[in-house]
Image (cartoon, rainbow, N blue to C red):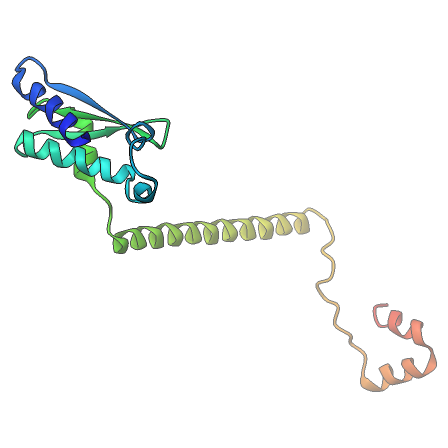
Amino acid sequence: AFRTAISSKLETFKSDPTQHVTKIDVNLSKLIRGVPPDEMDRVTMDVFKFTVHETVEEIGMDKWIAAKEPSEFLDECIFAVYKEGHCPPEILEDLNRGDMPDEVKGQTKFLAEAQSKAMQRRDKKKDEELARQGLMNKGSSGGVVLNTNKRDRRTLEQIQKDMMEGGEDAKRSRFD
């Protein structure tokens, strides 16, 4: 019933030379009302989409283009059928674009990740360089740079002697 309704609509579209575009409404909830419950799982929107495209190809002799228009509901869609030479360029571009193969998607993802990592490395190097320059500027302007020469210059004997004499004072005395 659905195929015959579409066929008759497309035949009238074909016979009218002044009409270049027609719309076909597909409402899944209306179309499955008469379907028995045991066959409901086989009747999907994809089946109706395929039927519309197949009928357009048959009647239009592979010269017409059927394009699905955006819809706000999942169980409804509208197909715009264009006669040869009357299809808008943006729809042709969308149809001809197709999907990218997985290999190409992987490559583009890898390139994007590599570029972001390179940017992060560059930013980190810039930050480190700015920090070094900031320390150099502070050091030359009279500021004190701490914790640069904290090496214990005592001999082993002095360290052992200090540890035997007193605990806390021994640790503090090495920095005096």
